[in-house]
Length: 369
Image (tube, rainbow, N blue to C red; front, top):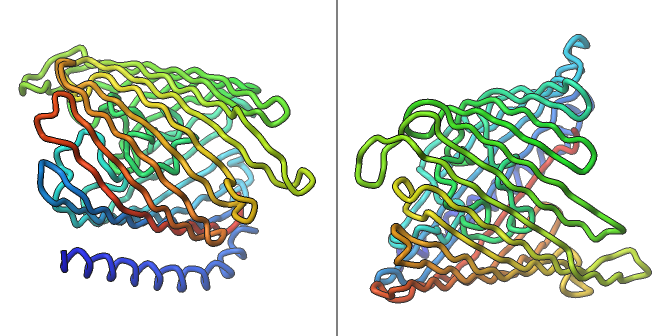
């Protein structure tokens, strides 16, 4: 426990130092914006205490993302409609426990180290048709849950049945074709797989709506491996594929201060299924509720509640995660999110697991794009 407190104190101190230094440099970055070059920094630290497998557990993952976006036609007019993006990730994880969960309590959990996370180019063929190629995080265009971003459990970002999805902690080389006419979208992608042979092929179709502020969206996707990949029993086999659906809708609104501020409730539904020979969680269903601006004096805050249920192995076992959080936005760049998670299993051979913790997040943008 003493070591855990020391780690938390050091991480909080380092975060404060980074915030102070980067906030000073932001003013200088505005000059780059005018020349088509924007900078970003996202830093998050999670700290959780609880119980897992009947024993005390703790984890303190930290994540820093340094990104830059360049509008290349500002430098060379012949490259009209071409955008370049690069990002560097710095991950650090101090953990003792929670390793038994298939739905990690923290979405920041990743291998420690410094990585070139993304390096890609995007070309606008037409206003509604874009091609993106390079080393990519595919989660921004596939299986994304907009109202799940503020939840700390990893399952809120995308369904854990999508075992091959290149995401922020395991980006891959690939090509995406993004077709977005009006409120509809149709995304295609081919990626080098995280493991196995052949290609990872992905397709997603969806639509969104926003009649007088009642915004919602619906998307469905399919993925498959063209080659073979290791099964849970250690054999290389073909046939790994899966499907997923994401639905989101704002269903309650209340305007305050003469219509200048909005308080709202939105919900999301997430479902995914994959081949059981390859995935430890071949099927998962989740629902979540997001309450934006819950108090008149805290218009930037939000609160949420979610339940994610995953089938394990041969569908005889279940892992159910209940999560609640309150996101306190102290400024445009800083947020603090206390969080509680309770994980129940059926059959309950390991006993219930719980985690109590919080996230400190800093997000800085130079202001351009």
